[in-house]
Image (tube, rainbow, N blue to C red; front, side, top):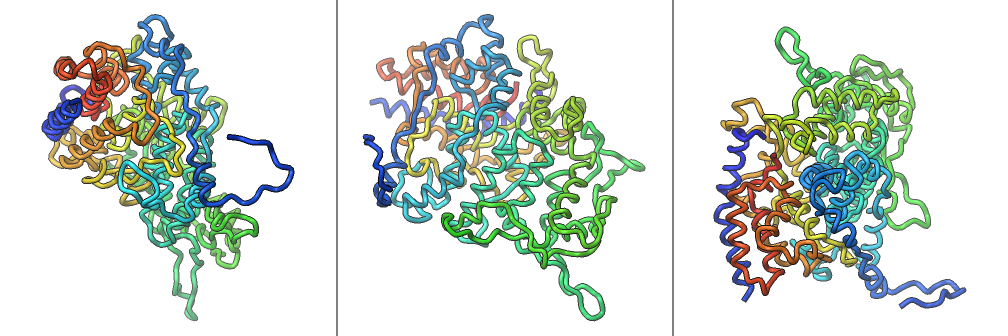
Length: 603
């Protein structure tokens, strides 16, 4: 956001933060006072206690090497990328810089780092871990068994998402998955199915996003459409074909929920767009992309799909982790007309789905509609028409005649001149830039700044932080509706931003109480993180107060902390005894994490 427009956002944040900073900092300062030989015979089944011990064994954890530490914070000019530019890039392209990622970007360069992330293996499959946890705990609840930061619950997959976001080495993939989860929304709030099925379907859905985050958008649409989690959430699992009375009139029609959201939210949006994301006007008015007849017809495609039947020898409920399958007897046989195209009557379910998704994928709106949202999630809330157009062009053609290549799209989003403006040699900053950071992503960034590692506990010990009084007001997979925590076009009513035609989507989620509560919870996390996670603060040790504040600012804000805040924070850190270096580091982290420069990703 520009300096003048961002002032409104920063004032809103600072007004909520002012009492919190002083209170938390004061509180922090007051606190200062065996393996064996393999047996040729089949192993005996392990007891529940043994399974718990195995799963709770400490995970391998090496946050960074001395060489990486030196490269990450080397003086500018000694690497391909300056420290601030690398940090800014990683704030956009990951959940926040770590020592190793800073070193990699500075030595490899931005484009090479992106390619290395495309090639990096993904982490453990969430479905596998969900079943391991269920088996180790003897059920779907860890309440009273696992000590967690945040209220205990039975939602293993939410804890799994925190683990991947905070500790996953595949940093770009995890950042993109988080963005995709806010575009193609599911939630574990649904109570239609049992808690076990709920967790397994959610785990399989996130696994699918991990697998297809760097693939083709057409494949991503297919994974979404076949997902049992989406089938449950948008009510087309076991969706039945129409029935007709003696007079030929329909007495039952297919559920239209997914058909509508597939077009409205997941692909083309409500209004026809130019390639640069601007509205296509007709006689000065927007043109709708689809009609109710289109929804009615498309709904026929999503009839007859169900969760596969159990297979002998598989874990109980494994069928819920698989894509849905068609049941021919329940699939609509009628002709399907939508978006100006026709699928012939009698087309089988599999072919029908393929043809329908091909039609949606080919629509000219998909590139600008999805491209703009990826820009908003990663870089800036108000991209220029030129920026959206360049990303849309990459979606339309990756340079080799391929449409929908998400790798090409991500390169375009992250390496665009508008994204890199402000870097050394990157050109002038646009007048309107940046975005508000969501509370859960701020917590993840702080965890990564502290080099958080997986402790190897049965369940990752970060739990349900979606409550405004017990958490940060937000958590993975806890969106209240299919419209996400906020809409991409949201602007606060009667705000200066809205009056000037700009949007600030995350402000739909944020209000004074949530801003204050999230800052307090994040500051609490800083104080107690090593009670739950593996933490390494060596990269912040041995620094004078000002140098410490500057390094924390580099990691958390891309060195965008104001001079006034830097001076005030340096004085506060100086007030902590040098005999307690850990507390000095915690206070510096708390202060910078409470600053407007961290809450508002703007530079």
